[in-house]
Length: 413
Ligand SMILES: Nc1ncnc2c1ncn2[C@@H]1O[C@H](COP(=O)(O)OP(=O)(O)OP(=O)(O)O)[C@@H](O)[C@H]1O
Ligand SMILES: [Mg+2]
Image (cartoon, rainbow, N blue to C red; front, side, top):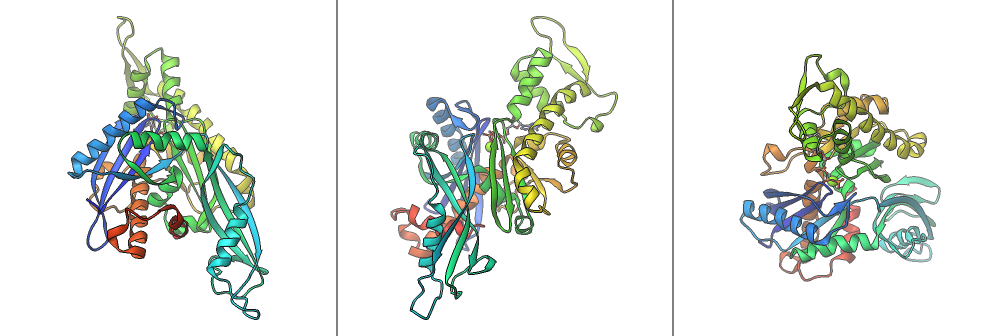
């Protein structure tokens, strides 16, 4: 049981828990997956504690049942409209080890990251991640690891992710009330990057778009580090609501019709394809062309992608992004979504983000809507390995965690 690691993705539409076990050879094996429908969040933020606690418990219990082990700690994902990202710089003089030896040590790196972190952050917000992008040693730009280099002036460029203190606290509170301790948290999109984006894509400049129920998360990775984080307050729930309003049917029926017959690229639909809409208030069902549903979905999805385009424009003007646009989240399962994104982003380099190699994982979970939770469990296993490497397996539970996470996070990207 002590070798179990748990990822928990508390989404607006669904809550997903994944249990992994680390084998003697250090390989992560997925042994339990549990999901539940989420009823206590709005746009990624907890608005009803009781409902959220219940949904978390259901998902975790289902995962426990599958894996046959009980778990007590987890890594959670943090998302929602309160998330913000910014780039910052810090500069320090290298202290070095001696008067004539200006060799950069860990101490200088810690100081220069702290200097970059010293931006004014409002009292009601907290720093979730500080991820180094690159360093400048004297005039030398683009240094990935300045350790042991000789220099006088050390500058750092970092990406900082912040979130609302109370939103994070409410999320943690729900998890605690569901009888789990939170070891660490990670931005949803960063977790998804871990499970679906290749190293080459991260270097070349790629955009991860997580099409969730309540929000659409955007993360640009370039030169191996995050360059832009943004959360758009729109997602699949709006698409379902549009169908419900235009066709005068319940939200539940609209969701089913979207899942069964939805499409967001009209050229994919054949002329004779039809959809049966159930009758409301005793009226008989009606048969409509499938294209009528697509005509409702496509403009909303196009609007979401246009909002993404607007968010990334400041970066894409300055830095060429030669990697891929990668779509994850439940919305990535919508037929035609790759075609629509290709048109709006004006590139053929669009693909669905399907989580890669996870031992023990069956095909049904190798799906873009599991990208975040699988990234979380993978991160939890890597974190465990780092902690065990430092201290041996026996006391990983009792040591203070947060102080050691910085180095661990740095190895991620
Ligand atoms: N096969 C499918 N076709 C179309 N849409 C789908 C499909 N499967 C799921 N969705 C949509 O994806 C959305 C849920 O995606 P996901 O599970 O990634 O969201 P979430 O993580 O719960 O929400 P968020 O990340 O916004 O907090 C819902 O709106 C759902 O209708
Ligand atoms: Mg999500």
